Length: 386
Image (cartoon, rainbow, N blue to C red; front, top):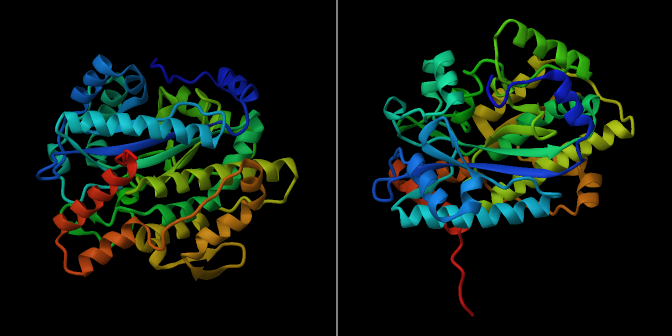
């Protein structure tokens, strides 16, 4: 069994002992040749370099499937503000090390033109298992995302939070969409990442509503008993309980081209999870909508992002997608007030900005270069001596 092997009784105990609203942030970046902006397989080089010169960074980076990708992790913060402060420090360290090694970093949900057939799977037990189990599905998944962990105390409560978060997932995806380009062309989608990952991997996307830990554990017990999985991270849902950390992990969002967008999304996710927990504690009624209805909004988010319409599933009417931000902010107002979360988004998200540049006459390469510059300037701002 790997390090992520799942003992259900141990997992239950981890959630019973967890702490509400701790936060962990995980951001994935593409490793790029600064001249061509092509993907380059140099994760192992960066990992080893960090181990030799920066112990803080070495503990904070991780591999993610392909060797032209790197993940940076904040570690556990006692609240959102602590996690963001840690993540900013680790970003600065990563971007500095990458620059020293002649690398650039990209932060969109997909690389606009990279050939997945030329990418290399990293040498770890987990990803060897992923490649062996999934083959083409794993090879095709060259994608970059933002994951946010939020601590939740109580095994039944963590399942209740995941259940209540399901209708919010497409809204978060629409807000975060940053991957309109794939395979050297405009895909016509706003989140091509979601299409090649969420719609391709098994045990992925919007989970069922389980209602209780026992129902959730019964399903996982079935997966383990039948050797469908041997570790819990082989369930790639867009939201999942994470027993190792005692958290709800929200995995729906594309990577964000700018640091302010990434931080705003992370704050909104924390607010949503906290509000869902608050609603459970206050016995606010909730409908466990069937996945087929939520999937209608998922497709709208994938296809049109914030340029289209989403569905109010309770009222069964459409509304302009940009209202998703207002709706989530309105719902989470009590939690945001309690946690001191100030959230603001730009007028247009990553996919909208990229497509508008393309429509304005820039080439795909020029659009990506502009986006990579945004990433460098915001994730690792140059400090000006005063």
